[in-house]
Length: 218
Image (cartoon, rainbow, N blue to C red; front, side, top):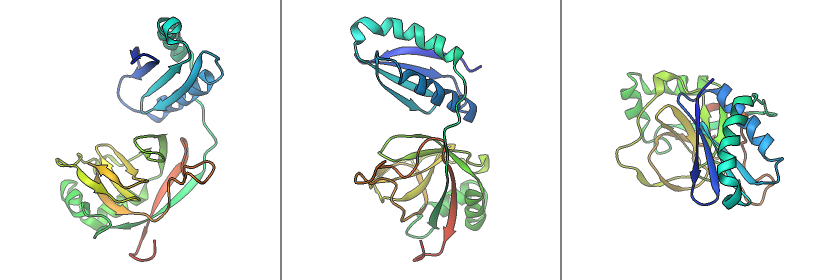
C-alpha cells in the first residue's frame, strides 16, 4: 500500500497526499474515499486530485487535528471504486498550427511526427481527475516513450481544445489560457460549457481515445 501523509492546508482544509508513483489503483481508492467522505456532515467538500485528496471542513477550528488522524485511518481502510465510465472519442488535428510542438516532441522521443501521432492515438487513456481549469482532464496511460518535459517558456495563450503532453501525462485545454505543455494538436470538441449539466464533457473514470483527423474535418 502506498504511504500517505496528511497535513493542514490553510485554515479550512486537510490534505491527504500519497507517495509516488501515480497509479490507476491508487486513484480508484482516492475516488472511493472521496465518496465515503461526502457522506459525513463535518465535510463541506471532498476534492480528489492526482495522488491526493483535499477535504474542506465545516468547522476546522474544532475538527482539523481529528480529521488528520481520521484521514490516515480511512485511507488504510479504503477500497478501490470503479465509477461508471464512458468511452469517449476525441477527434484531433495533429501538427501544423494546431500542434506547433509536434515536431520538437517527436525529435525528443526519437520518432517521426507520424510515429508519435500513431503512438499517442493508439493508447486508451483514463481520466484521473479534472483540475487546473474547469473541465481540464488529467489523463493516465501515456506511453512512456512519449514522456516529454514541459516547455522552458510557457505560452501566454494556449488555444482552447489544445491537446498536449506535460511530463508523463497528456491532457486537453478546455479554455484558452497560459500554459506550458507541449502542444501536439487540437480538437473542436467543447470540454466545458457552463450552460450544460454537467458542464464538463469528461469525468473521472472515463476512457478516452484520440482519433487523428485531417485539418478541416475535426
